[in-house]
Amino acid sequence: MDGEQHRPELSTGHRVTYVVGQRTGRRQLCRRGVVTGSPVTDDATAVTWVPVQVDGQARDADPQWVAADAIIDVVSAS
Image: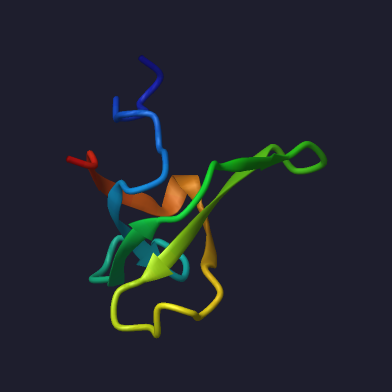
């Protein structure tokens, strides 16, 4: 492996925890939410974006697009 953690394929219903902002090695603000759809890769930047319904937001709020590499924990949908 090239330093990347092995984690399940992200899909609708997975609960995720992700880092907000730049990783600096210091304490970081994290948020949690539920994946609401399939990840999308931006071919121009090679960044994979994941739609996440952030915990605490209204159910009808638009999902927030989170960079896959900012996700630090995934719990499979049960």
